[in-house]
Structure formats: C-alpha cells, structure tokens
Amino acid sequence: MRRDEEHAVKVESRKEEPAEYDGMRLKLVDATLEVVGQVGLENLTIRKVSEHAGVSVGLVHHHFENKSNLVYKTFVYMIRSVRNQLIAGRRKISDPVERLKFTVDMCFSDEVMSPGAANVWPHMWSSSAHEVDVQRLCAAFSRRLRSNFIHDFRQAGCDATMANIYAIQALALTHGLWIEHRVAGTVSIEEVLAIFHGVIDNATNQGWKTSFRGLANFGH
Image (cartoon, rainbow, N blue to C red; front, side):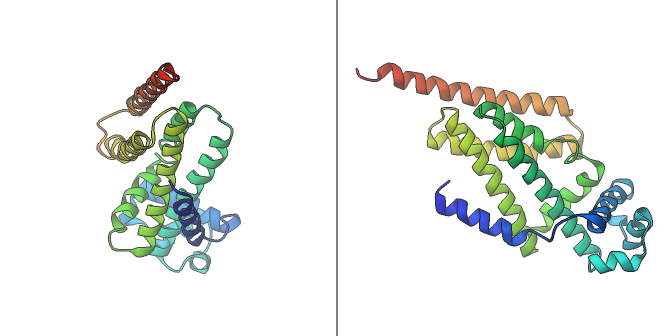
C-alpha cells in the first residue's frame, strides 16, 4: 500500500475512534455482548443490558443514546480491541510468516468468536450497505488488515502483485471461514486454522522459491 493510502487509513480510523472504553462504558459494552450472546441481537433491549450490568436504565442512556447507538459503539469497541491486539502482537514477531499466522489467529480468537460477537459482527457488516458510519468503519478495518497481509507477504518473499493477490484471498478466507464456522457450523475452529495456515505456508513457500531462483540467476 502506498504511503498516502496508509495515511488515509490512519486518519479515517482515528475519526471513527470513540472516547476511551473504560469504567462504566466498558462495563455496559461487556454486558451488551453477554446479553446478545444469551438472547440474540433481535431481543436485545436497554433494560436487559441495565439489569445484567446492575445499573439503572437511565445510566445506560447517559452513555448511549439508544439501542442502535449501543450496538454500534459495541462494534466499534470490538474492532478497536482486535486492532490494538494485532498492533501489539505483531510488533513482537519478526518472522513474516509467523506474523501472518498470528494475524489469522487473532481474527478467530475466542473474543471474536464469542456468542455475542457472532451476533454483532454479521449485523454490522450487513448494515454497512446503508449506514455510512458503519461502512467507513468496516472499510477502514479491512484496509488495515489487507495492508498488514500485503506487508507480511512481501517480507516473506512474494512480489508486489502476488502479495496483493494473496492479501485479497486472505481477506476472503477470513470472512468466509468465519461464517462457515460461526454461523453455518460446517467447519471446526481447528479446521479453520489448519486451512488458513496451510494457505499461508503454500503462498510463502512459493514466494521464497521465486526469490531463490532470482538469486541463482544473479550475475549470470
């Protein structure tokens, strides 16, 4: 990704960041995910969240305008949490293939795959078709994830074109396997990670072979 595109992603992401999620605000978001996991998004109410959190309905409304705002801010929190964990974890990994696998593992972590998240994630992605704020947030998250994939594939030896292709494929696998596991229930989480890690190994091995061929021809 070009430097100007990376800057645009950072600016757009900052615009979507809410106030810090701590104290009561975080407690209410956690309660929302718990309630959604128990009764589903369609049966979520402000009262149920207040009862689960042990606070008044008025206090919930003090932090969130209505149910839609509460769900949206919960989605913002979820994306921000995953993003921050990705940034912190990736910084500690020098090997690009291991970084790719860590990124994949984070996309299928217990937090992302929880019952509450399983209801909120699909709803927000589908609502992005007609809600501008949600669309911006989803697009910024996807662009950042794609940029990470491209960077790692490039460092693993893939050329620019193939790194971009593999990154797009990785995004498609992320969304597709998430649905197949969490929504359709057709594959286990072990199968999901084995498939994804295998795709990464195959892609990066081909990348290194190309690099080695180039080195073998160097100077001839």
